[in-house]
Image (tube, rainbow, N blue to C red; front, side, top):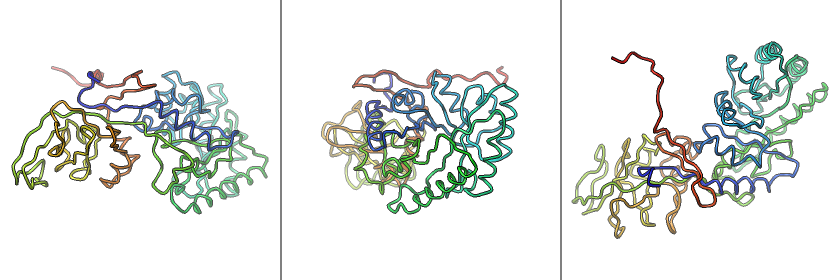
Length: 396
């Protein structure tokens, strides 16, 4: 990728398709999928991911109203659910664009109903139920069931969906997740007793899909698994075989030889125990590459591991190439992905630095171009090199 010489993230859309098909095989035939593309598709790019998974999903989920509107502006027409709380100021656009907000209070639903009527629309919403996450949602009790019954009669509103979110489905012991599922189903029964039958019920996240918890409902929400990562090490890999989607590539800008005792990078946390060859890589935490990999992580050069020496800087870091024969300036460097027989997974970086694998991919910044591959060829790119601001201050 000559145009993106410093660094780029490769996005393998064939791996995305593989992951969707693998999950699909682990679901009942009648269960549909919602593709979660929040946080710009977990750092992979929400729009290209949305198009790649379109054949496998009935709709999409995002975290904010703005994320849903981005999909609409790029021609995504399937249903979109905002999983978080949408501010009232966003209601007009949500109604106009047919984007489903999440709601769980009388105030939210009455305000949305009034505006939908004013706009001459009848708009779908999804109700959130708090079965154990203690984040958002109504309690699964009689009072909430009465509220839903009452709110379901409001003009301008369609009660389309009812969902909860598992807090611990990615742990070895799934007892807590099963308890949440029981509380959710109890609430469904309370609604049915009141004559309320909400057509789309969804609970299962990626861990639920893999472990078959909550997959017997109308929909599931595929999230981290789309991107080829398991929710945790405690989740079994056998039911659903996933392939990593993101790679991160750079190159060597400079190689030098240092003498014993020479210190490397900020703080001098590494001192050479012997004569060494070290290489500089033009990537740092300013790109989202984790600083907590300082002195702990490694990269791949010529198919071999090159350990990080000293602290990762904002824009560069150094690695040991003493034992990598022929290592030279301009050599490609793999920060995430495969090089010959070696591979670095995002999970490996999380373990090495004590971080979280979801966070690593989400934090790869916009200074890093994304390059999209399908069937081994580049089909598109995204960068912000021509990014401009509207003038909002006087220029002398």
